[in-house]
Image 1 (cartoon, rainbow, N blue to C red):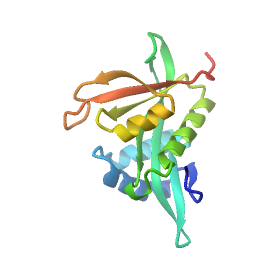
Image 2: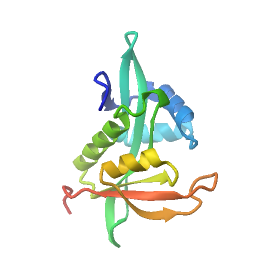
Image 3: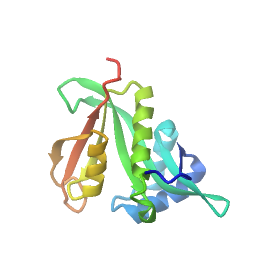
Image 4: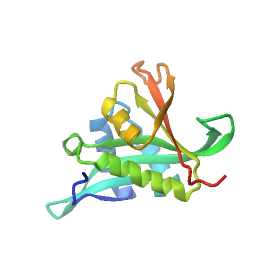
Length: 167
């Protein structure tokens, strides 16, 4: 269940400091400032944050960074327009409140507006909470990429067909 005071909205440039802090605190994969700027500039409508009000100030507690790509379908051999979930993170003290689920639901709805036929992401094979979240959203494991992460851990490629997308 989503905490009632959490708002999901499009990220803004003034959010970047908090977003980068969440990335650093939550994930072993840390991206450069320029990488975040690129996604916010070029795919801004697909870069979402979860925010709360704390002492009359907005606090970002989670984010999801996405982009659109053209590539081979994870469900066949055709070229397709795909949504790629690059990074999602929620501060540890705000996990298990439905924030990650809500960020992903909003992401899927945004991708549908762009006539995306599928959404995919990479996830560590040992990240069971994330894998379970994605399965709840009907993502399926389509392959394993050995040594995907810098520490040598494998990644699952998980993908979701968007049946509503037009061919």
